[in-house]
Image 1 (cartoon, rainbow, N blue to C red):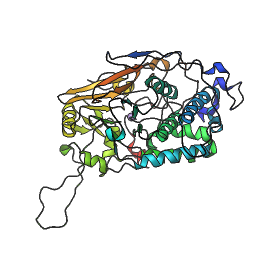
Image 2: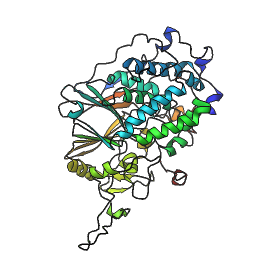
Image 3: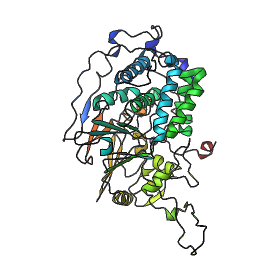
Image 4: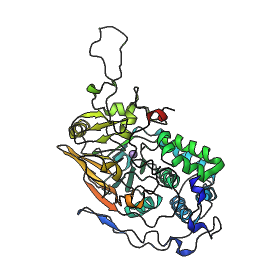
Length: 459
Ligand SMILES: [Mn+2]
């Protein structure tokens, strides 16, 4: 295993699971600078954080099964500390398998019950004092996620979070990252919303590192932990609608699947629904179709009738009008500004916020803006805008130094009363990152998910 050949340097002189000296967390926020890219209201600038308390490890599940703010905060601290002071293989001494089991089971149950498209609105308590934070791809970059949560402010009664997916793969702390967000979900199920990304799948995690990461960290229990994570990923909802004005999803919009035949003899009982793989007949799907899609699949199919999950997770915007198959990815759609307008109009919305494209992907997209600020405004149409937000700064983690993009990450703040005017917050990566080995062959997997290997996905 790559990760076991060279434990992090900092682990060398420390006995396992021993709290660090007080200074060990001091570099945590010190090297981070934040640039607000909006002139309108912005959250307070980060102040140097006080020394962090030591985590209580090993983590234990609360006796009454109810998570608290203190529990979630300690989990974040423990993951941050172990990433800096322990070898990856020692993670079970911080988060025992039995505690992982309780967390993943509790989280899975909540997620599987949610609809394909979650509604964040007044019924949940969204109101004049609320903010909604929308976050893009984070890809296992634990320290940047911890920074983001502190910078934006932790989830609270007035602060909702929608994560657009891609929690794992490429970065070295996918498991810690996903479990941190899952713990927030369990603690505040009506304030934190975790959507599925294309990387929350069997195919992507087997190619881009998450499977190997989990097997390395949990050894004999690795397969069990990995399987439970996949089961949880299957439960992640696909999309959200915020304040009746904003649609968010990892990839984007989706096609209509069912077409009723135009002609049907009166009185005939066999009403035929035919699937619509015909490229020339691609049309936008409806909210009803999105709600009916079967999302509980390890890998969204790219053929057959259950195409909506694949579209939502894998599609990309384009400057070329119309809907077309996303040939570069091998799954999903490309859609033009006209489709953004149609979609916004049809659903009576003002914004689409999607993620899915980092600086590497954008480098190859002609006519599309680069991702160096962590967000782009891709389409500006009569009814509103299409935005891409990407929250993994200095991505990907293991790229050779000369090939690094040094991009900023960003998140978006949506404010009352209508939650339809985005405030952008760009931020730099937390440096230095603990030294670890990658869990995938990053030189072979330089491009973001392009040329999906359909043959291996079918297995
Ligand atoms: Mn993606």
